[in-house]
Image (tube, rainbow, N blue to C red):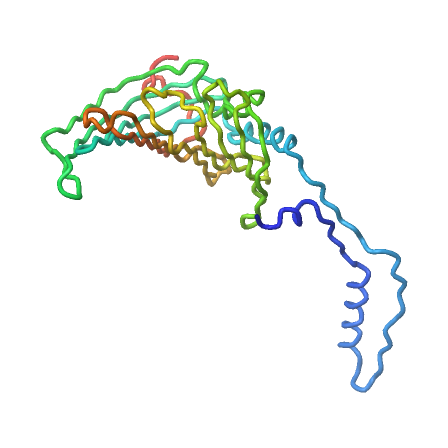
Length: 293
């Protein structure tokens, strides 16, 4: 922790009067002719100027974060973007890599459409300490499929992160305040209040400049799928700022260990990465590409 108390709770003393006295003395000394004696004038210092910064409470951080999240795409009515879902499925002696490429449209009303562009699957076999691709066992499919998002979709215009939309389900804790370059970053943790609901715990990083979330990490203290899943090692969502000032998702990562991998029939683990790119704002809805609304 980089002295958060000094950033938020301490008082900064600024002796303005003393600075003025010293500045005037130096100017007069430089202007004086050689051999001339300069007498420092007398000033009466009444008081110093005190500047105090109030600490931001956890409740205020959460409330401001809700408002800040709503401004990530402010000024825009719609957008398109592409994303690739890469899945790595691991067995003891083989692995499978599947890539699915999509094009998405979303607007500020909550409407969205997703266009499936391409799908490819590659298979690998274990050979010694490395992997060898089984070129004869490659699947490639390029169907053009359009799906309409329903009201529960993760529309970036209208949906807040789940822990902000359902605050009553979680307990929050301010874990740290750090200074990164010229930005104050709040590190906030949250845990589900109920021991019976399989909700995630997590840590989020909030930029105090405009109270926008810049990074999220999640885990499950209570396994949501105990018969299938052994352990959820990591789930994270990463954000980035575009040149126009918009904050958008850059990638989502997940790493899960499965049960039954010792048999060689069931996979041991699944790793998923979703990578977002090609954001275009205010293009309008293209019915020729996405179909009629």
